[in-house]
Image (cartoon, each protein chain N blue to C red):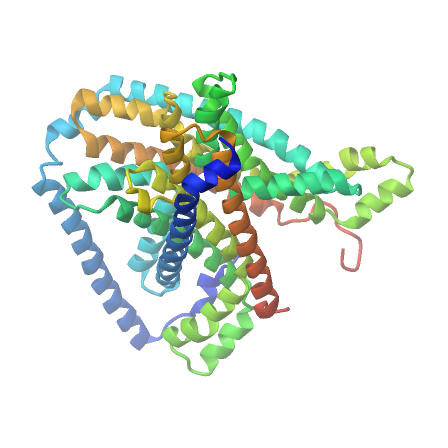
Amino acid sequence: MSLSALLSEYGDLYLRALLNTWRLTALCFAGAFAIGVAITVLRVCPVKPLRVFGDFFVQVFRNIPGAALLILLVYALPRLRVLLSYEMCVIVASVLIPSAFCSEHLMSGMNTISPGEIEAARALGLTFTQLIGRIVIPQALRSTVLPMTSLVVGTMLTTALGSQVPLRPNQLELTGAVNYINSRAVGGILAFAISAALYVATALVIGWVGGRIDRKVRILR
Amino acid sequence: MSAPTIRDRLYEAPGPRTRRRVALFTVLALIGLGFLLFIIIRQFARQGQLEARYWDFFLKWSTWRYLGQGLLSTLKAALTAAVIAIALGFILMRGKLRQNPVPRWIATAVIEFTRGVPTLLLIYFFFLVLPRMGLNLGAFWRITLPCAISASGIIAEAFRAGVNAVPKGQAEAALSLGLSNTRTFYQVVFPQALRFVIPSLISELVIVLKDTTFAYVVSYADLMQHAKVLITSHDALVSVYLVVAVIYILINYALNRMSDRIAQGNRRPTVQRQGGAA
């Protein structure tokens, strides 16, 4: 199949798949980020059971393979009477796994804060909540822009899990779209190359934006 | 473990009032987490997932031997993929550090490609396209090669970071002693860089190991496939998948711990300059 034939027949599909990949990536990263921050707060709070829970959460989702988590969500949860749509399963998996990595990045970002700042904040009488919310998290965020940028790309790669569940054609993301095309026509290398190019281009844009943000907000020490 | 982390710095020895509050919150947290656990277990019990028939075959030696065989195949694929990925990553790193722009440009393009494309897309490429082009690889290579290619770019960057972490003076000293560029790299810079790189290579093994769980796409009999067989023979889905997930988590956790340990040992610089900053 030539490029023009492929694009005229499946151009819409690719465009929708690209937009779906973007939508899933943005949505899942936002979720992962929120959970990552919350879990990180638990991991440093003075209440020991919460710290242990936070560590446990991170170790589980940092180490579980995406396919294993997706299979649990798709096949095991319904037997426990928890029914999620296929797309929801992909979203949940692509939120939980990056959230663990997000927390790990934040923890190492926190370690770059100098002890003097925390002592100063405590000397000023800031409570734990204020200390975390105003001193620790903002600085940890500013020093972890580059790892977070890779995490956005990582989240995008995780959303390829969408190809492993039966989604409707209008829900397909870039990897699923290639499978779809390959199952109906011989797309060959080209069908893959288009998806790959769209992935790589997205990753490059994300990397570029991340680099710009990093230069703006990084704290020079 | 030994280095003080942010957790140790965030609070000092609490006074009596804070201690009471922390104790109160600890109790509340324990109640909350216990309740969560209770709900999960109750849901298992209500749906009959705690029945003995779902779990008793894990007491049999044959079950574990069968899972062990699957795990062995998984490890074989992961290790092979890791070795290939390290070789590819090394070549890419050499290319990227060249003065000559052509290999540098090619290496950069390949690295960006492997880092931007999901492993699944590569697996489908090896599974769907290559056979049509007359290249018939076995199931083992159809899972191993895509995982290796996918990891090679990140490994190349890890190698590069390691090489850059070796003080410049090392290379300068070697060159001024009359060593060629090649010998400088292989005898002076790279051996030192390797020390920094080993932790990230181990973490990389974790990523490769996770990627091999897609082996079911190419019907390679890995741990997941063996789990599926167990599920059909015992009609026990939830318990088997849970156990398999825990096996994966424990292996990866152990690998990550190992990587952290080695990284901690590396904090101490290899070569210290007498007096003054390195």
